[in-house]
Image 1 (cartoon, rainbow, N blue to C red):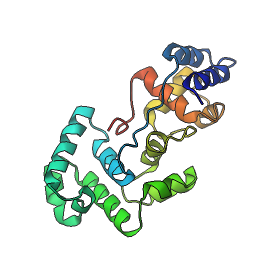
Image 2 (image 1 turned 45 degrees about the vertical axis):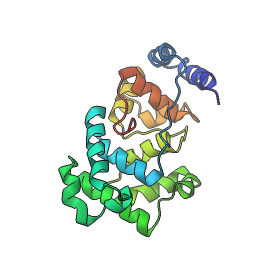
Image 3 (image 1 turned 30 degrees about the vertical axis):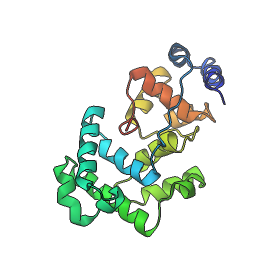
Image 4 (image 1 turned 135 degrees about the vertical axis):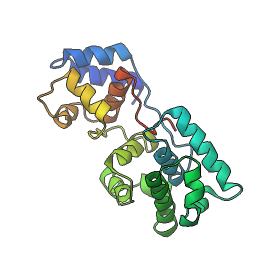
Amino acid sequence: MPHRAVHDHLLAAAEPLFPDLYAAIRHQGALKLPRRDDLAFPDYLCRAIAGQQISVKAAAAIWGRVEASAGDADLLDHFCPGNTESLRACGLSGAKTRTIITIAETHRTVGLDTDVLRALPIGQRSARLTEIWGVGQWTADMMNIFYFGEGDVWPDGDVAARKTLERLTSRRRKTVRTAAMFKPYRSWLAYYMWAHVDAPPDGATA
């Protein structure tokens, strides 16, 4: 659906009950939900993990060192237990290093092929991802929204999206219930909440 039509749908859903939310969405105008699918999925997931909870600038610097540390080797081949210290030296935390190595190992043994994952329903795809050590529901939600382009995911585990929706609607009402009123564009609703407070989710701009 064109961005303007999504914007109009969100406005129509907000107007009867939530004047502050209506005003916030209207102020933002018709936003475009970005896609980050220029890399194969396992590579993107690793890069997104590396960039979580740090600034975009710091994430880019660390990932540059990670790529340099691989030399001519394929990145996913480089992500193995024998290279743990090399990856830590790039600035990755111990947990991020373990997660990235586990992602690469999962891809080698089970498979995280982009087309296979894209064909799965959202719930099954999330379940596959959260089986990986270090990959939680928040990360799965970000992958579903920004990589796979799913338009109807409400990331209730994202503090910025949840708290912003609460402030603009009601703190006494569960945000999952509020977001359900905006089906089938809950991913867009979350993106408007991030835009409202200028808080893009960690890893989403990697």
